[in-house]
Amino acid sequence: MNSLTTRFAPSPSGLLHLGNARTALFSLLAALPDGRFLLRIEDSDRARVSPAFEAALRVDLEWLGFGAYIDEAAIWRQSERSGVYNDFLERLAHENLVYPCFCAESELVAERASLRARGLPPRYSGRCAALKPADARSRIMAGERAVWRFRVPPGQEVGFCDVVRGPQRMATNLLGDFVVRRANGEAMFFFANALDDALSGVTLVLRGEDHLANTPRQILILRALGLPVPDYGHLPLVLSASGVPLSKRDGAGSLAALREEGFLPLAVVNYLARLGAVVESERLLPLVELAQAFDRRRIGHAPAHYDRDQLLHWQRLAMAATPVAEWVSWVAKHVPQADRLRFVEAVRPNALFPEDYRRWAEIMYGERRTLDDDARAAIVAAGGELFHAAVAHLDAGGVAGDLPAVLKAAGHGGRRLFHGLRAALTGRVAGPELKDILALMPRALVARRLRECGSTDAKNL
Ligand code: GLU
Image: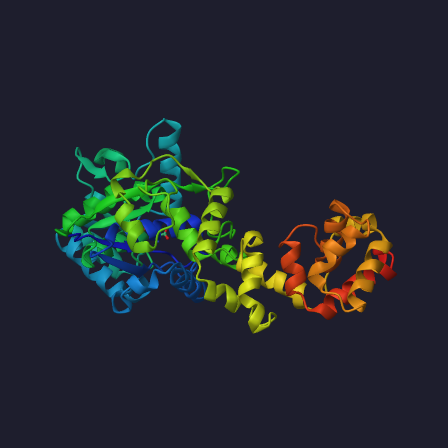
């Protein structure tokens, strides 16, 4: 029995990339089969988020197959919860655990610079902590702007055991009293984030290690409020092949781009499940089985590198696992019903993406075919005579499938023959078996393409 509640809490400020998707996946896998997996939209920073990115991330999560595990009624949106954050801030204020701070930004900047110059951590001096509550209140009543700071207990340590990185400790003296509410009344991101985790019953937070520095502060807040503190696990970043962190804003490695390219969701999910984590199986697995083979205690803490070859490996397996009926649906527009099964079987060794099936369908059944440079060279090398002989065979009522044997018997044997025919018919020198091409392509199209190669200089094709 797994009673974990996990969540994915994206900020809709860009397209989800593989790193974000991995955080979502690990959170889901940790919760399956019978824990809860929540989605929370962290959209409180109005300047950076947009409904379009929220819509895009919902599309991505659906595409990955996570939608079935998300309880729509339990989705929280931070922009709708400011009342809750205010209530909890007031509770803290009531207990004198937060205080208003009137220090000007310029003073704070100077203070931090001076601390840094002396080699000290740039924390707040605590100047406003000593203000009398009555004085602070009258300044606020008089319209003075204030942020609210959390009164950090001095001389303590905040410790927690990170599920990924092991024991962590932070001396509260290093923290300084931190801001939990801005002067404009908005809750700070990590304040809202900690409250929402606790209030929605989240028991395990898996998130990017860029949030590690927030955790001690969040633990202090939750403890001060008597709210439950979840377990935390901070996942190392996913770096691009060139070693830079993937970023939501530059679209690198975005799920949308991978989908567009034709990657299948099952390939992406199987790839990500192994990206810095251990799955006790080399097989392509559906989500529920991945969850059984996934151990959240064995997530690595070194940065993971995006490796396209690995992703392509899973793509191959996912393509092979796709039901034939689906391949058939990809080509239905071009390929006559009776040919479809043989066609998809013939194309299968050359198909890495669904688009490859469509491309070959267009090549073998469409009106136009384009020649690549190798095909041009192969047609020139085959020579006009070979194509004349081929056309003569067809004109005399011969079967297209007999062409290789007939042409060979007429002295056109070898590589020249096979490359030449394939290039003339498909515009490519690699692809499905020639015997399948000849059996499947409409006879009139075969005759026309061979005739073109016999009558025209290949450069003009
Ligand atoms: N909203 C944060 C982000 O998109 C995630 C915070 C968290 O998971 O705790 O980076």
